[in-house]
Image 1 (tube, rainbow, N blue to C red):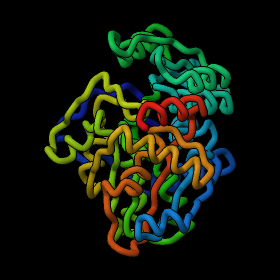
Image 2: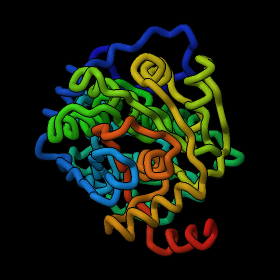
Image 3: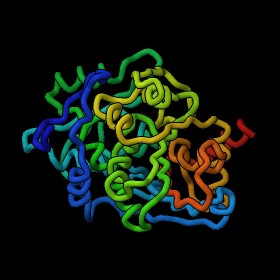
Length: 340
C-alpha cells in the first residue's frame, strides 16, 4: 500500500496475510510530517521505580501529548496524506475517545470536517473534548450496535473517508514515532513495554525498536478482561472479545486488525495481561509518586512492570510508554475505592 492510497474501512484480518509494508522509513516520514505539530513528549525517570523493578526505567509520557494521548500522532499523519477531494468531503471514524479527540484536533488544524462514532458510555471527558475540537459526534450503544457498520453506512451516505483508529499503515507509522523519539533520546533499550488495544501503537513501536535497538525485546500489555491480542499472539489465530467491560476503555477493541495482527506476530516478542486491580494500583502510584495523571489504558505498560507481571532482566534498560492521560480525578477516586 502506498501513501497515495485512500484510507478505507478494513475487513477482519486473514490468518495467512503477509506482513504489511509498514517500514521504519514510513515512521521516519511520519516524524517529519509531525514536526512542529505533535509535542515531543518528555521522558521521566524515577529512583523509586528503578529500585522497585531492579531496572533503569525510562517513561515516555504520551499523556502530555496533544489531546492527551499518542493518538494525535497517527491521526495527523493520516489526515496530512489525504487528497484535496477527501479533505473537502471530510472524514469519519469510530472511537471510544482518544482517537476521536485526536482526529478532531488534526481535522481542525488541517481544515478537514470530522465525524466520530462514539459509544454512549465513553468517558465524559473524552466526549466533551471531541466535541470541543469541532467534531460531529454520533453516539451508539456498544452492547447492541456495531460501530464499524454505523461508520461505513455514514461514510457511504455522505462521501466521507474512513480513518480507522488503528488498522491502517498511516496510523501505525504515526504511532511508531513515539518509540522512535524515546530511543533517540535515551539510547538503546533492552526491553520496551507498550500497551495494546487494536495494536497500532504496539506494532508501530515494535517496528521502530527493531530498527533503532535491534536487541530490544518488545512486550505488549493488555487488560485481562480484554486479552484478545495475547490469545491471538500465542495461538497465532485471531481471537475476538466483544463488549469487554475492562476499565481500560482504550483496550476494548474486539480484536487486532488486518495490518496490526501480522505486524504484532512478526515484531513483538511477548504479550502479557494485567488485572483491573493492578491497573488501578498503578494509576494511584503514578499520581502519588510521580505526580502525573494517567488513564487506565495509559498505565497498562507500567502496570506489567511495577506489578511484576513482566520481570525484566536485572539492571536492564527498560522503556515504557504511558499512552494517555484522559481521565478525571473523580474517576480515579471511584476506581481506587472500588479496587481497594
